[in-house]
Length: 461
Image 1 (cartoon, rainbow, N blue to C red):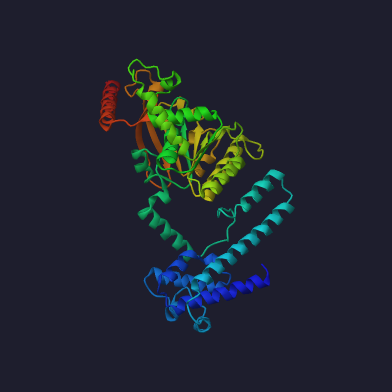
Image 2: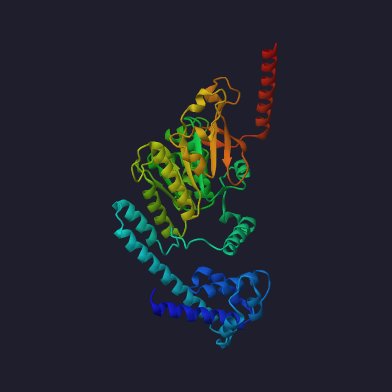
């Protein structure tokens, strides 16, 4: 940063703080300025302390005049300096102009820091892909997305972030909680998916892709969030087929057979299909069916979506073990572990959930109880430590032909860092997952209990 910019910033900060104290914290303009700026916009450490004191005082309902600011516990910079700052301010008339100018100076400093970082990255002896990915993240200035941090924060700043998070959770939960579209699952998760890395794991035929389709529909259609879907297993039209079948509640085979149904001579299902199809034209769901997708590619695509819409609401990966690593490792588990850590970092970078499908190592199929647990995740011991939630799917009828549970799928929340663990249920049909009646589940559980008691008596006899 040049000396001229530094001096300009210092004087602007003084004038702004003096104007707030001159107005004694009264007026909508003061509130607007305190909302616009944050402590990072100030260059001087002394001015950071004074501004933080003002913010804390306003939150407590105390007007930040010169006496209140000097007595604040975080402001030990001396009465004389604060008084001189006020004395050199003739009025609060230019307060908003000072704030806007200071914000621009802060942005200029940020740009300069990123330019310096880019120069350092260019000179480092690393491979080109690593350099380009790192530099690409620094160019996303306008979106506010960056992997760069300003170091450790004082706990007072962390407290402010914590209170903002609680306020959002209490009064504007859609900002921090992302509903899955399944009421019972949301209850277990603590209201929905938090910002973080989440896994859905299962053996084949359990319905993990169908579950993801239902969640994508809720994010992209019901909530109208821009989302990215990385499908390494299916082509884009196959993904759309599953999505529309689930959303319109139409059997996949019925759609494929041109709606030939003797029970529907009026072709009402065909009309419904094309009506629902229009909802997808208006949705911001982006499908990437590149077969050798990688973390760096997903990040680039997510940035494009963010630049276009201002934010991204969710990132979906189908599935983790088909992804290509940006670098080679001696062992596949290390490679997969690096990808899960990168995906977790992506959730923080874009402030949205990253939901990935996982294959299992089939270790559960050799157990008596074949319900999956996190340690069954294939190729990665890192999954269990990196994910914020881990959901396993289990259908008893896949393993037991005569099972009374038939097509009912157990959705097993086995790991959840932000809520409880537990089980909820969905029925897997030709149109995807649908809700199942609670009394049906109670009946099946009661029958299982009676059967277990009967088997126990037989064994004891």
